[in-house]
Structures are given as structure tokens and as C-alpha cells.
Image (cartoon, rainbow, N blue to C red; front, top):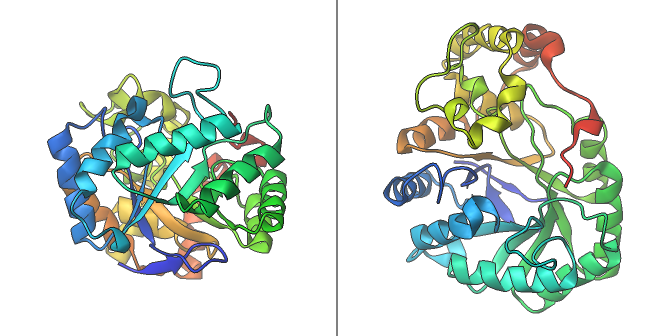
Length: 327
């Protein structure tokens, strides 16, 4: 494992992070989830990312139990807030009341006294940004949160949030966007703005929901038990499940073979070539997937390899900044 600084801060994280969206508390039974976390720890992963909304709050609880007994100072535990976690009108969003109460609930579920990085899961257009950032700053001053970040914010929102954070004497150090060979919407606007503001990317779905592993083939039904066959998880993968995309992904196989990498390792290594990316988040349903993905750590892809990948994928790559996910 290799490690990188997160944003313009003193926090060092593993360049491959373990995330439990769509797995813990849902797609994967607890014993399997615990085995995947142990595999991540054994591989040198120190950074674990979750969110209060994952699996209806169960994912945080599973992660808390899986990390119980580990040396807390050796871990970076990240979670997020925004989506509804209850039936009330204040059980959602980035208002002060929900931020305070959601933080307390996450601390209980994660079995910890502080969150290393607390992230706004989306931008909340219904709440003044000043209220949101002040509430985050108060959580930092209370010692319940060490750093703050955001997820799927646009360039102008990151700039405004970072400026407010500085005024409040705290640091906004990260953004968590979707990013992969196939999904590059952050490159034109979010990345340059983030570099100016001292913000790193912690990217999710570097495997494009598993499409970049090459297991989905054009003209064929998805393998039984794969994410594409899951009624809940499958809805996020549909945009990539076209014959054109799947054909071009298969054409990446010789690139991976020439480098002695699996398709998954190539995909994870690719996102880590971006100097603004501090970590790629991987998920797993089996420990073997963790063992495979972490081998991407430290891999360096030469310029000719990157150009070859661009040539293979061609116009199926999505680059439109307007495609940034919204609340």
C-alpha cells in the first residue's frame, strides 16, 4: 500500500480506500463483510468510507463492528450526511439540526468518538451555505469531526465552500465524485478548482460499477449474482451496459495483459494517475476482490499507455461537467 496526503492538510490516507456502499448491511452478509474488512486491513488499507444512508444506516453499524478492537489512531474513518435517515422533515439535508443529530448517530453506529472526515453527501440548495459550513465548523471545534469534505459538488460550490471554511478557521479538504476511465466529468472544472482550493478527490466507482473488470460482455446476459442482476444495485450500472461501451471495455484487455495487470487493477491504477486524486474507493463482496484491487497501489502508467486507453475508449467516455450528480 502507498499513502497520500488529503488536500492541503496533514491527514495521510491509503491511496486505496475501502467503501461499503451497496454491500455492508445489504448485498453482503455480515460475516462476509467482516472478512472483506479484515482483508482490507491486512492489505494495508487504513481508510474506510461509509455514509449514514447506506443500507438504511446499517452499513455504518456493520463497519463499526468490523473495526472494533482495531487501533483507532491507525485508521481514518469517513462518513457522510445529507440523504434522509428518518421520516421527519429535518431528517435530511445540510441544516444545522440534521448535521448535529446525524453526526451523533453516526458516532454511535461507528463506535467511535470522532469522525476523521465528515462529508456533505450532496449540495443542499435549500439551506444557506453559511449555515452548513458553520455547523460543520462547530463539529470540528467540538472534536467530533477532524476534517470536512463534500461529495459530488460542482466546481463553483467547492470554491464557495472552501472560502467559507477558511473564514471559519477550518479546512475543506476533499470532494468525493464518481470517476473512472468511462466517467470523467470532474476533469475540466472540478479538478482545476480543487487544486487551487487545496482539495483532493476521493473517487468512487473507479471500476464503473464493475463494468471495467470486463466481466460484462456485449450481447450476453450479465453473470448470475453480479451487480447488474441486483434490483437495487443494478440501477446504477445501466448507463454503462450498452454494447458499444462493453465492446470497447473488452478491447482494453490487451492493454491490461501487456502490463501484467487484471482489468480491475488497470482501472484502479488509471484513476490514481490523476495527481488530484488522493484515493480510489473500492468495494467488495469477497476478500479476493480486495486482494486483487489493492495490487493497483503504486502502479505507474506511462503516457503511451494512457494514450492507448483513450484511443480504445474513444467517444464512449462521458466528460460533461453538467452530469455531476445532484441531490
